[in-house]
Length: 323
Image 1 (cartoon, rainbow, N blue to C red):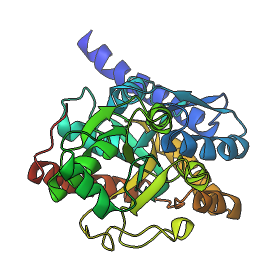
Image 2: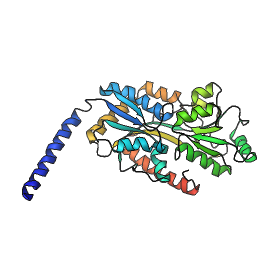
Image 3: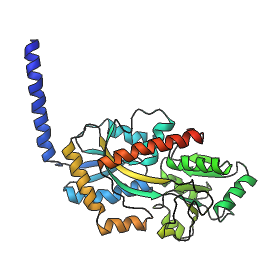
Image 4: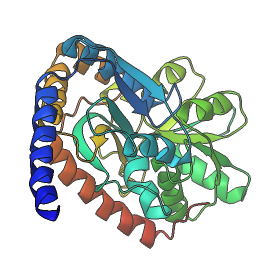
């Protein structure tokens, strides 16, 4: 019986592999679900919708956006982690959740072991904005106001462990101030309360801010990059504002469950590469204050590992803790 089982198992495995290979060659033959780790309205959601529509056309199958906010990106990550590794359930993840959440809290998922990189879709520096009624017009004035009014200011983030959270805590450490954290389930809800005056400020990526800045509903103080953004040419960079180490960029990348067949990954990343090279996609990214920065699976894997190392050092040196 043992000899028969030993013989049958490899044959079964070969048959399964053959079936999987045949399926890979026919991929996709039904709709794909793109699970998004944030609520509608934020940059993660914007990135997902920017890529899902042209990707649907390229693949000949619907790519359906499924927003699963909460748990610092953990709800969406867990959904995809537990999904069948066949390319029909994918994750559009925000870098703050993917590399910072696991550094601050114990997660049921591993950012490297449980997912296969597909492609980076969008990258962007962050912008610190305040409600217009706040009597500050520069980062220097904000710091002075925070020192004169300890524990009076608060800031919104898309959740505990988000890059917004860590970035502002880093600023607290650098400036010697204390601005209180108010976490939300995504950038969209955070923006709603900021615009409503319930919170004082936030640091987030430009896409959800640009329209509100243009309308005078939010006042930008600094861009967290070494150079100014062309789309916000009047807003100083971090070095110009006196904080050269406040260099923070977000990225928004697509992942598949670990074990997804290579032909499926190759198909997805190849089509995404073509889409991101189009003038329409690049122009849309620039209008949002972001960059169409494609990374293939190997490049994204190396980059995310470097980010894990970098932010691990920042979190330790700034003594940042999850709330």
